Image 1 (spheres, rainbow, N blue to C red):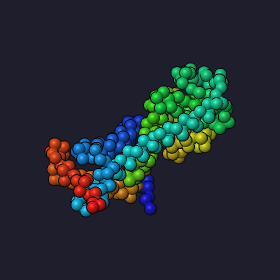
Image 2 (cartoon, rainbow, N blue to C red; image 1 turned 90 degrees about the vertical axis):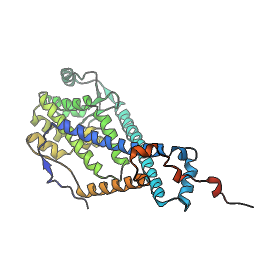
Image 3 (cartoon, rainbow, N blue to C red; image 1 turned 90 degrees about the horizontal axis):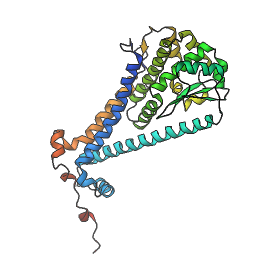
Image 4 (tube, one colour; image 1 turned 180 degrees about the vertical axis):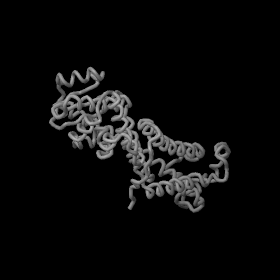
Length: 322
């Protein structure tokens, strides 16, 4: 069983926002690297693969004349292709699910209360907030291209003015950072690249750091840490957050701890078991896909006639019926 090493911690040398953005950049770069690997290999074998993709792959797997290394390459290509498809499917699924829930909530859209309208005007959010009549107390940021903030009547009734200002300043950070889109992409990558489980740890750290950065921004805007912590406790784990809000991925205890003690050392969530599995999976995938090209340098391979080894004479494999 993979155990979280909560003892792995360090002082954040950079603001939480910068560390979180670097983690997100790493996640996206990893996904792009897999896509480039797939495109490079396909480009090298395009003359063989493009005309008879399905027929070639089936016959190559069944024919003993194909070297075992090329079978591994085909398996690697299949894994990469399925990963890209899974990413697109998960991206579409998360976006569709969120949109459906948001549309249901917006059916109960109303006019902001005077207290809320005043705070929105101060924060410059008057045109970016939807106010809905729901008893559950929560606020969330949603939307991919032009993000907005959704606030419920339950939230305005549960929080005092100072707490409400802090929560809205927190959500404004997510809005300005386009966090709904970032989280959509990061979650889809995590779900698609299942053979690299360490991505789950990276995603958890990224999401928590973004929440801490949003809290820091709210404090810089005039909110008090006590008010933010109080509001967080009041709205903790509203059920709709699981499909909609950035807050759905928040580690409640960590946020409260950082609000109470801003000098607290950040505890990185990390599993050596998942990291080990990811490293092994990465090595195996690279060996499977690139081994037939060794020991050629990549630059030479791209200009070499390296696909001829895998060329099949399709007609010669068709059984004779004479």
